[in-house]
Length: 494
Image (cartoon, rainbow, N blue to C red; front, side, top):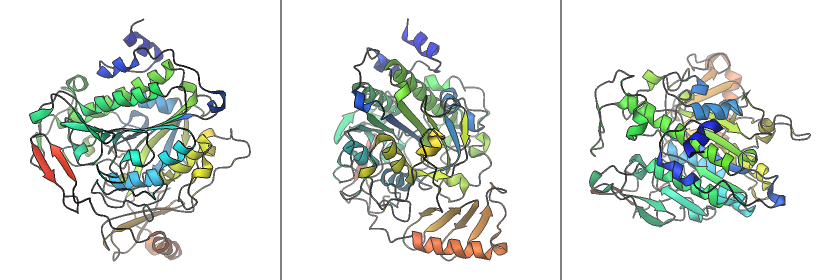
């Protein structure tokens, strides 16, 4: 049977991507040790700037995402899951450390601010429990030459972008293989021969194949659909001519990006990611790992309405207010699905309020690694919710509150969710605005004046949850490259 026929028979929707080559010769992999059979492999796929409603399973009508929709249909879809922050690097810091924005080490969004040796990551916890650990995509928590690189933070392997500004380009001259530059031939001088997402996914699938006989943690913080707006021609074809296009988008940063089909390209990028998810799932099935692998899919923050992306046209955030960089729901509520055959009931929907600090304790419980989790984290395990009563005597705990902040110095903004109440303060000197999300998911009506006791309680939470961050400085030697251009970043990451 041809590979393409096998993929279609398996039910996953694929195109003609070069990733298919990685599936060669992987149907007969050695068996796992019996002691590891109860510990699932863990795959966490994290899209970049994907809006809450940019997937079919969350109501998207114009962009096709059949493979991710199938994950939801065969698992659980969360309706009240939140990112760690409203922008990239801090949200990733929360995810990796289990510490919310009032405590997490990296709170600015420069992209090169490093984790330090004393910071404990999810990867370190799982590695101590015997898991192979790999990170593939956009890191954003430490540039080359710092203590924050993934291979110094618990990952056996890393392939992708270290500095997140480097990750703004889909046809870079090079990616990082661990701490070694990996040239992408044909991308020199602004050439566009190798699409970075495809290369990164190929390496991720190779990691899974090479570690199929032991428990593994595969962290996939992909760059799609973050701008810049570029997709391979094959991904573009299904959307060409379907959308009326606005004026071509010209990137204001100055490098040569003139995208004449911004709507088509945005849709194609998301479908390109979806196709990769389908190939990953088919590979797990070929390796006989499907039933012993839990796969999560989420986004690092809310959708954006800039850089040429027309979020209003796609209704990217659905009923949620605002977009990335704000602490309204559109900036922090994200799609999240999880699938684990035989353990997670298919076709279920969870209204559990959860967020990125919960990733570390959840993965640790799944891996039997709870003893390695620091005692001071802010997350709680959501395993009881995932398994829906299949854990004997286990009841799902709930957060007393969820906390976010973002900003520099004394000008940070804050948000708290407590039950159905959500409070937002745009800066320390502005009044607190209060919303009842059970009746007002769009955060249209401020009810602070009618609820002084709730406001007073949340005010105290905002004071207690915030701690002074350590210095948020880019390494002075940080450099990154566009084709034909070399930039030096200052300490502000600009």
